[in-house]
Length: 314
Image 1 (cartoon, rainbow, N blue to C red):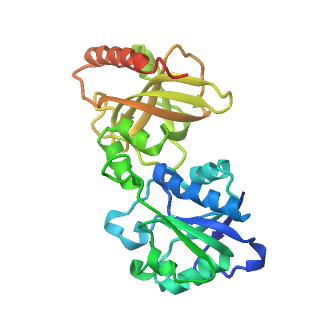
Image 2 (image 1 turned 120 degrees about the vertical axis):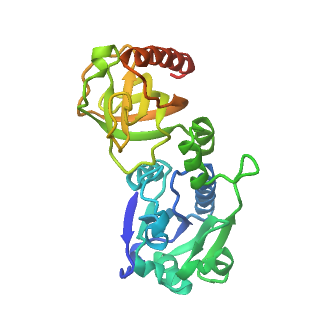
Image 3 (image 1 turned 90 degrees about the horizontal axis):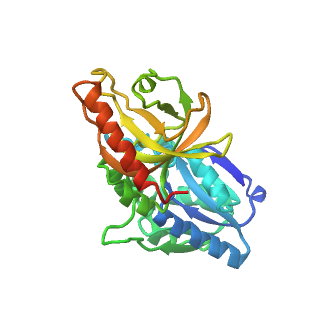
């Protein structure tokens, strides 16, 4: 897969890029709705013998357009999104830098500089895609160009509510993890590195691996989860209980949430290992306990509940 990074001042030699079908959108999460757009692109590309391409943007447009509500964390950070697209068999990914200059482009300028110049012959987007200055361009205006064919993919919904990145984030933020996973079409994951922690867990019978996220992930609600942890170097997958939070029983001054995982029947040292956490079930919110005794009692309950919930997970 070839990754082509573009900014508002780039000049691209069209001869270097073969004719392609391109799915366009931000695609954070690569959820079921996004996959519907990308699968449509793949089908068209194969039927018309075109290269398969995806055009995405970095950073999120809100960083430029809506500074009061910027999105700087992601369900699928760019590096993860690129890996997932490669696994889908995409040939080109056009990563467009979303800058102030890009935001000021008139719709026609955007189309000519970023669609036609990319040798796009088939363009595929979701029904609500907009582009150009103040979002003046839309799927209707894209249909007016003779240089490429436009295909609009309708709303993808499991209920009356469409599947969207924003809705999935809202579900993760309120602890509705299982529904978020359904809408994603997979288990929500966070990649990271095992780092040194306070090592308090081992003194109370619950040793934990502290995970520092490798990218700017959107973190689910603070609380306790049933999880599995994949250790990349071995490929081993281990079941456990995960916690996202600020350890209120021990601290009053931690602001940034910490990710910890207690693994069942596991006593190896994995400091420095690259890992992926898979979040299966939200068990309960984070609570401040009056002492270690009540905390340990609750952690025993959490462990048994997580073991039961993960029984059928390979």
